[in-house]
Structure formats: structure tokens, C-alpha cells
Length: 553
Image 1 (cartoon, helix red, strand yellow):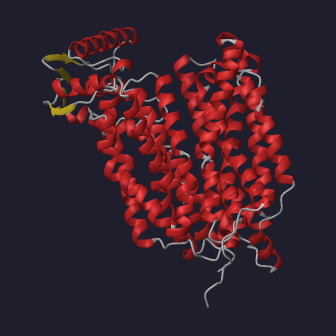
Image 2 (cartoon, rainbow, N blue to C red; image 1 turned 45 degrees about the vertical axis):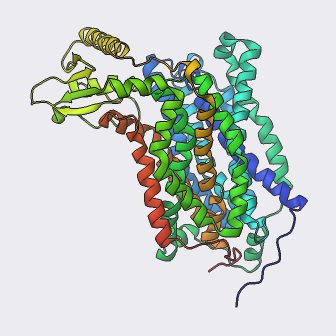
Image 3 (cartoon, rainbow, N blue to C red; image 1 turned 180 degrees about the horizontal axis):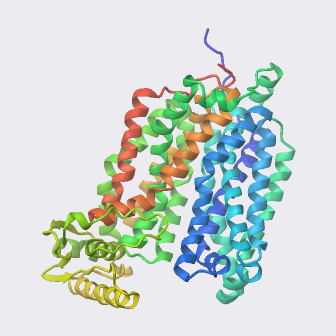
């Protein structure tokens, strides 16, 4: 017999409070994400000053990445607690750990004060933040969905998805306001701490609201019936019927969602600044405008998924991304840096090298040293964001770069003394730069030639794809799993998808570009994963919008 659901009704004050309190935690996530990322260079100098400047920055980024890497472990740990003792208290613990860790970064003594203890404590705090974030999203999505009336779960949980934009703007406003008020020198010295310290206000408001909230109705019902799970990890991942759904949720939903999400915002910004050489401030403004235009569509697609289903909207977003990324990013090049597009059309760049001495340049930490003439040539061109064709040279022949009619011979740094290697590196880079300039390759985008309207239109389209895949995903993940193991089961595929598949996108894409020579080939990474998600999700994942989320079977 089919379950009879009451007709959808207006949002109650209690439901508004649930959405607001749950969303605050996700704002924290993105506030901290952008805060640490934006201030990585300053943090490197403050906490890793015992190293040379390059290594210090690399370690600062590694500390940043550590938070991503441990997110799935936080999902498992806090998901288990959430399914055993309740959503409300687990949710409260994650926000406390996350908020206090962010605050402590703001008051942490530097390397100059306490030596090696400073970077060690910083990395521990980043790990704690990552663990807490692993429990935060699953808790937020589960808590809101279990409070939402039937027929409104997509619309209600979509509010959580909008908070990335709020976190971005909040961090940018706090950093910009602090920098402007005290000046660059004072900010770099000690003012950078203020954005971390003011996060305590967000924490206080969030904890105060969450303490006044009730446990979710679905969990209360399950607890009253004595049906809570005694071993949610074993049930989620040790029983094939549930593990199968976890795997499908990862490869048939969240992996594709994650790469579309990262491509539409982070990779688009990276492509603008690195490949198209648009200055950072202008690129940030373009992305900010597109986010402002696109953000309401998280709610639009969340609400639409309540009517037509989650699956068709998410998979349509992945399919559109897979089909249109190449022409869209090509159009972005012509709009943002037409001089670069013209130079590529007129003066092709060709690297001629022995394939045996060319390695795959996957270098996530920035610590790998490439020494062959092929790798050095490709690194210089990739660093200059120049697309090129590959040609094969005979064994024992050094690699060459042909730019128009100019041919430049690369060198091998293996076995060279440091001073000589540095000198050769400088000479080689100058020769390449001079040849590129002569061939019409611009060193930066000309602001007067940027088609600003078209750039915003293209970026807004990419954000709309983000809203399609991300708006309904929280509701769908909640609906895929029974109440007794929901928090545990849904958190893991979400955080592996977004923390690993999504988080690796910039590094992997850059490695593909460096290897193949085509600045668009990095797009193959999101295109292949999004395409795989369309096929797997289309064949094996069932629509969930009408499931009874109070069921425990």
C-alpha cells in the first residue's frame, strides 16, 4: 500500500530556524576554505619560515590539502555518532571543533615564537577542521531533510547548497576590510589573524541557535521504536545491499557533481588567471558577478527536483558539462584574451622530443624536480600557459621548441651544478619568452579588449551547471539510505566525491595540460568523470523524490 503524504504547506518558523542553523555550519566551511586559501602566502611566512620561501608555500598548501584528505574519515567517524546518538548533538560537536580550530589559528604563536611546534599545531588544527567538516555536511543535509515536509525536501536542502557563495563573500569582505583599515604591512605582520579570530562570532551564534533546536523527527521516531543502529559502520559498509548503494552514490552521483562543481567555479577562475592571463582582481569580479546571478538557481533546481525528480536534473547538468565544456572554454578564451586566441591560430608552437624522456607531470606538492630536456621544455610552456603540439625526435636528441619560425633548444639539468642549472634555466626561459612575444603571444590579457559581458555570460552558464548538479544532491543522498544508517552512509560518498575527485581536479588538469600541450585538455578530467556519472547514474540509480525517509529497511 502506497504511503499517503500530506500536501505541501508553507515553511514554518521552526523549519526556517532549522535551515538557518544548519546552513551556518556550511558557511563556516566555505569561510574557512577561502580564508586559509587566500592567506596561504602569509601563513607560509608566519608558520613555515624555517624553510626557504618556495618550500614554505608548498607546506602551507599541504596543510590546506590535509583538511580535504581527512574529510571522508570525519564522515565515517561523525556519521557513526550521528546514527547512534542523534543528529543534533553530533551536529553541535562538529561545529564546535570546526569553529574553535579556526579561532585558534588566529591566536596561534608563529614559528619565530615557538619554533617547529607552530607548524605542527597548525597542521593538527587543519586535520581537526577537515574531520569536523566531514561530519558537518552530512549532518546539515540529514537534519534539514528529516525536518522537511514531503514534497519540499529538495527546496529545503537546496538552501544549504547556496552557502558556498555566502562563505566566499564573507571571507573576501573580512579580508578586504581588514587590509584596507590597517594597511598591507600591518596586515601581513599581525592583521591576518583578525579574519580567523572574528569567526568566533559565527561560532557563538551557531551554537546558541543549535542548542535551542530539537532532534530530527525521523531520528526521534526511530529511537522511540528502538530501531537505532548499534553498528552503523558495519551496516553501511559491511552489508552488500547498503555498500552497493554507497558505491553507486559515489560513481553515479557525487563524483560527477564534484567535478562539475569545481570546474564551474574554481577551475574557471584558475583558467581565467593562469591560462588566459586575466589579472586576479578582474577575474574575481567576473566570477563574483556570475555567482550572484547563478546562486538563486540552487533553490530553483532544488524545488524543481521536488516536482520532476532529482536524477534527471543532476544527470542533465553532468551531460551538458561533458558535451559543452570544450566549446564553452574555447569561447571564454576568445572573449577574455582575444590576442591569445589570434596568436594560437597564427603561430603554432611545437615541442619536438624523444617520448622516452617525457614524464607525466603530476606534481601535487610541487616538490618533484623535472630534469630531462623534454620535461623542462614542457614545464616552461605550461607555466606560460602556451598550447603546443607534440612531435617525435630521435633518441639522444635534446628537445626543441618551435614558435612560428623560431627554434629553441632545451637542456638537461641532470648532473649540473646548482649555479649552472639556474643560469641555463634563466637563459632558456628568456629565449622562450622573447620568441613568444615576437609571435604575438600576450604576457597578459588586454583589459580594453576583454568582452566583459560575454565573459560573465559564459561564467554564469558554468555556474548554472553547478546549480543543476549541486542543488538537488543533498536531498537525493538523504533519500537513498534508511534512517538508521543515513548520516554515515550519505556522508562518505559525498566527501570522497568532493574532497578527492573534486579536490584533485586543478592538479590533475594541470598535469594533463603540461603533458599533452593543449591548454584545453585538462577539461578531459571533468568530462570523463561527468560522462561516467551520466552512464552509471542513468543505468543503475533509481529516482528517490517519492521515497518515505522515515523507513528503516
